Image (cartoon, rainbow, N blue to C red; front, top):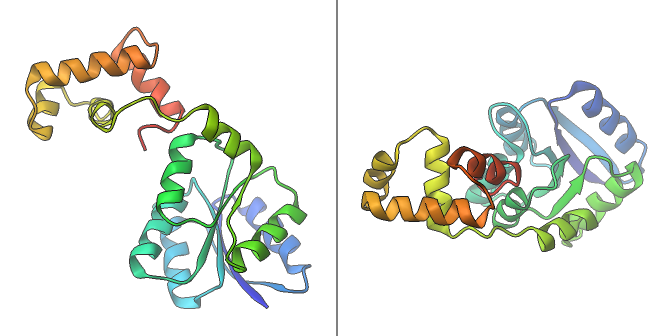
Length: 201
C-alpha cells in the first residue's frame, strides 16, 4: 500500500483528490494539510511514501516543503501539482529533488499513475511543462536575476550595489542588460515579465 499525504490549500480540491485516490486499491491517503507548514510537519511525523503538494500554499510553498525535506534527508517522494507552467518553478523543483511535476488539470488516472511511478523511483513530468521548459528557459544571467529580484523588493540601484558588493555603474549595466533581454522598456516591465515567467524564484 502506497501511503500518501496531500498538501493543498483549497479544501474542495483537497477533498476531491483524497476521495478519488482512496478508490485506488494500492493507495492510502494518511493525512491532509491546508498549508505548507502543516504539510511539512505531517510528512515528518506520518512518514508517507509520497507527498502530493500544491506549489502555491500559505506559510510554505510546495517547493519550500520539498527543499526542507531534501535537507532532512527524507525518503518521501514529492509530487508537485500546479496550475503554473512556469520554467522558474520547474527548475527550482528539479533542484529540490522533486520526483514528479503535474498540472492540476491532469485526470485522476494520471494522478494515481504518477504516484505509482514516483513511488517506484521514476520521474514524472507533464508534457506541457516539459514543452514550457524547452521554450522558455531564462535568458537572464544569475547576476541579472539577482539585480532584478532585489529591485522587485524595492531596493534602489545603490542599495543593490551595496548588498551585492558591486559598483553603482555595474548594477546599472546588469539592469540595462536584463531589461534588454526581456524586451522591456522599463525596470517595472522587466520585473513583471520575469516574475510572470517564474524567473525571479
